[in-house]
Length: 335
View (cartoon, one colour):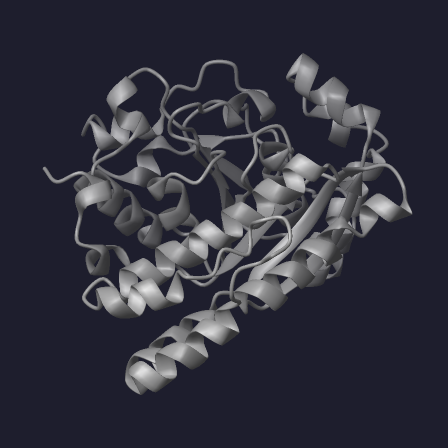
């Protein structure tokens, strides 16, 4: 079986359903998994049916944040054909209306699935019945991570207000763009060379911008330039700042969005900010979601709820309230 890295680039352009969100970023430790869980919790509380997917295939741990110590089924069961349908490995969580697709962690080779395995995952995700699917991506810019990110309709990049995180978030967005360009221009290496001349990730942004490169490409191949412009127009990015401590740090998302727009030619916006919250630390260290969501909701979860309400309104007035009448099932059991 051909590896994903060597697979024909034009063969992996599958797009997933419209209400599928990717939560990624270039650096580990910025809170992607926490943000993914809080998004799923908020959408579920609003009456939406949600599936939370752990796509960190090399270091799955989303189940622990959902209070599930040993998941009965994982993605490995599906990939190794122990279970025929992806629906059969979904687990109930303590979050109302939220089910979990736990990532595997026992078979090392599945940390880098081949092209056939990745295609099977994507086809299976297309068939799941849910209002929203939240895909929690692994850190870094591996091809699997970038391809899942690009396949989703809403692409969220989590960034912490630290120079290294800002740099890595920009690098992640740039890598995703280059991956998209590589897929579309794989049969035109000269055009691809022109479009990757820019290296705006360097300190002074000394390289050409994407806008300038498109102008060069337009003179060389107008039809190809139109394809590239379509990619730039449709590859929208949303920045979310996590663990901010003051108003200055809250503006981190706006800064990264502006740089992405100026140098990469992408439509980027800032979703908002989640401030540092001790309740999140208690949740993660104790593997107990109730620390953040039980009783009086922490202000980080409340801030994320506001963002979720803005981009995915509640299904009814009932969904505007923090509690749903539905009692969640015992976490960790098959749905």
